Image (tube, rainbow, N blue to C red; front, side, top):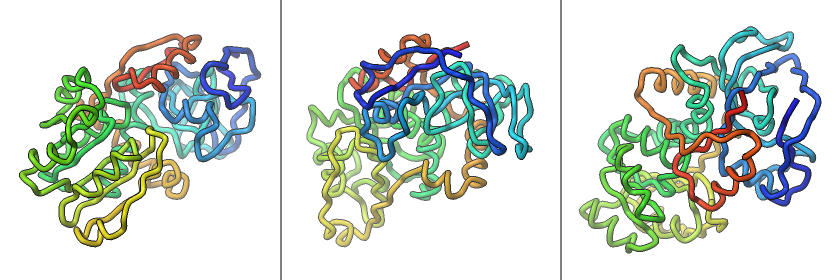
Length: 325
């Protein structure tokens, strides 16, 4: 079968489409005929050797995909051949067929497209876990989301709107403002050209942020740490800047706010039943039109390398999807 192969941790430039043997599902896995796979910043980190874990080489990138079940392991009870599903996995999505854990797969409701489904579990799963499970967000609270036009960021804007939050979107260029406003942001801050402190104080009437949802890290989170409201929750989601922030611990003490880590992948490994329930909830929200993933563009499998370059260069709004069938 055709698959994108990563043979060294040298980044997207060395990715190639090749022929590999079809994988075989273990007892707790399903084999999926892949129709669509999304391209994430995490995928780019994995092929560059910059993620927390390194898969054995060579490997097939792709952490999220959708398609049709063609075979199941002996202990699988939730799925059968012919089922339309989406799945998350550390690797494997950029291929004509992939295996996925039963616990990390979800059945697609009628009417949900493969392309849309391939963008939900990582993006909206991260946003849902952060806002609902970790921050316990309440309607009317103010959330500031950095990287708001990216995959996870835009999902957080969309879900925040659905939850009744006041969404302030942080972007790095003015051309991204219309999209985040369309998805529910009441205010937009360009943190490359505007003074973040002054703007946050202005739009919150001096109260500060109830929930900080940070995808960038580095100096941005360090500034957010000084802009929290009393009893707020500051959440590091990712470090796309490449810099791990340093926060003086007197800041959460003085404002009585919490710094809450968000690592949805590890949570899903430890609490698979809860994660499966979340995935079902997200797919139903999608089917009912309550969330609306934004697909920047759809590309063939052969253009996976270009798609990853676009993600790394931050020229993508929402998600790129690879159409495989």
